[in-house]
Amino acid sequence: MYLSGVAAESGGIACAHAICNGMSSLEKFNHIQHGEKVAFGLLVQLVLEKADIEEIENVIYVIKTAGLPLTLADFGIDEFVESDWREVVDIACSPANSMGNMPVKVSANQVYQAIIEANKLAQRYHD
Image (cartoon, rainbow, N blue to C red):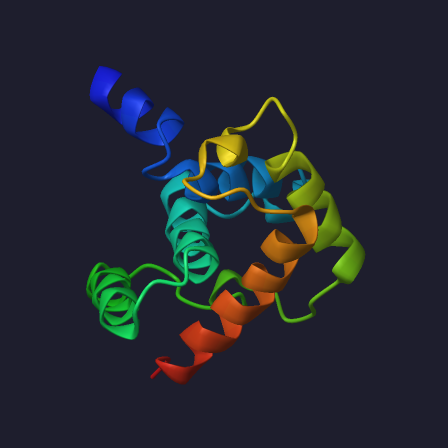
């Protein structure tokens, strides 16, 4: 438990958990499990960090192998409502969250755009 907290707070998965926290604050996303939200948040973090495609593909492979949802549609989110995702981002980027522990400073708009890009990226690898 200690190492998990240290990893989340020290930047290793700061964005992934912040996105999860933001999604958890909206009732419409309550049907999505914690680990599923974190997995999607990890894709968002990799986009923000401008990770190389090999690293992203490795993460996508693990997500798919584990049978976790890969795209927003997999979560049952068929309509992308900008105001919902802006609220997720506002919460994720609040001082109370771990987004500030990212290795690079990111703006709310960068996080919002990374959510869109992560979903588009995941769609390319969807079966």
